[in-house]
Image (cartoon, rainbow, N blue to C red; front, side):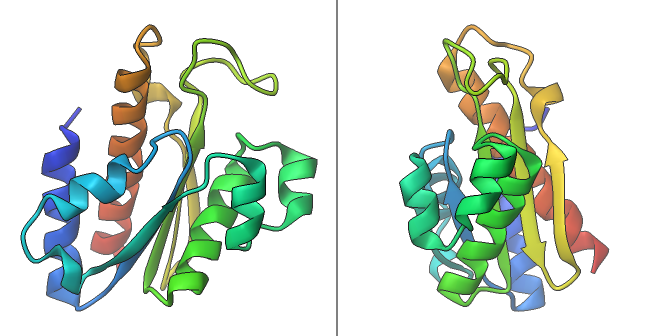
Length: 163
C-alpha cells in the first residue's frame, strides 16, 4: 500500500485542481491525516482544518448525532460517515473525511484490533468503507494508525477522481 505522504500529496493535488476544500475528523489516527496534509507547502488553500475526536463526547461536540454512536457503536461505518458529514458542515468544506477504528492493544466495543472505518462526505454524498483489510499488522498501534490514515486518504482520492 502507498505511504500516507504519497496519498496526501495526491489528494492535495486533486483538491487544488478542482478548487475544493477539505476538513478532517479523526479518532484513532490522532491527527495523522491533518499532519500529513499540512506537511505539504501550500496546503492552507485546500485544507480548512481538522479535529481529533477521540472520545464519544468529542464526536457529539462536532455534530455527530448521539443516537448514531449509541445505536451502531463508536467504531462503525455509520459513525465514520457521520464524522465526515459533521466536520464538512462545521468547517464549511467541500469534502469531509472521518475515520474511526481500533488501534489496540485490546478490542473495543466488540470490534477487533485493526478494524477501521473511513468515511468521505463530498459533492456525491457520503461514502464509507471498511479500511480493516489494510490493517493486517495488528501488533503496532502506529502501523494501524498509518494504515487507517492511508485508507481514508485513498477513499478521498477515489472520490475526487470520480467527480
